[in-house]
Length: 407
Ligand code: PXP
Image 1 (cartoon, protein in one colour):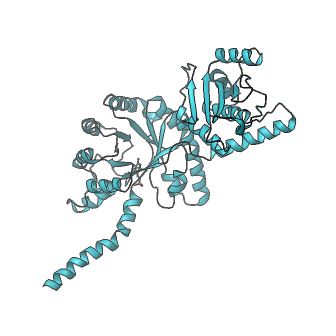
Image 2: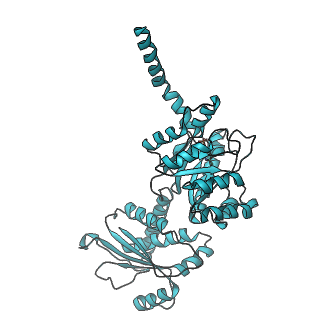
């Protein structure tokens, strides 16, 4: 593991997303072309930082970050000293330690109106540059050089992924819509789900609506048996469906608003207005071991409410971005989704996105580094109907021709 992150600080008031920090640090190493080297990041409190500052730099009180390069002067902690590190001279592939005081980082985050994770990311960047020999105290030119490099790296980080590859979950509701059009048994969403999984889907999503317009109870029961990836049951928070979910135990549920007259889910849940009721549902699900996602609009108030009531995931509604009538509006919707996904991720929520995504609109959302999974249905079923048509006609034609030859 090239980046190790260790905690020597208790921070009851903050939830630190170590996965995020490790990933950001790995990206920084890659951008600085030292990804083959190990880096240790230690998060300490002000008391430990004060001791280190006194011991290694003869300065009293805590500081925000200290770098300890693995070089000849490894016993010198550097905050403002250049490490003058000659990487090639280091026999083992380790850069050294970056020590950060979380207490100081928290104070600075408040002062600079940043999230704690952004502040920690800045301190890791700063510490890393010291490890690599940058020193803002040597001269004005050096300070400028270090600042420029910091900006360049932070800018690159902003555009790089912080999660592993985005996953794709397939919503098979509309396979059931076609079946229900004739009230028969074909096409079967259970068979469709198996094909989706074989093609690489990371999960299967179905919405068991109160009016059972597409997915039926039997589908959910069978899917629970057959889905090998992850079954995500979309549902309104009503008693009947909650009881079904508790009985069937999907891998997760996504709570959505549900109106009988709508063609499809029209908007996100108003979590802020229904905190008490949703918290109760989340609690019930959690007790049954079912994590809950809340389908919400890209809105900070909803994200904060989702976090407050203990949701594990939020799924950000991409409908308005997909349906935007012009490029300017689409760009605005995209920027809002990007910013809100970041806010949710920073709070420690796992972030999914979906609704209305198609072959034109998916790539930008999939490139957002905070979004873990996309839930897509209609566009894929629609494409399948077209791309599968040629084969379907040929198969039927073969039967007709074969039968007429025999006849
Ligand atoms: N996510 C949620 C919460 C949904 O309600 C739906 C539609 O059922 C989707 C994703 C998938 O949307 P689409 O079918 O437009 O891809």
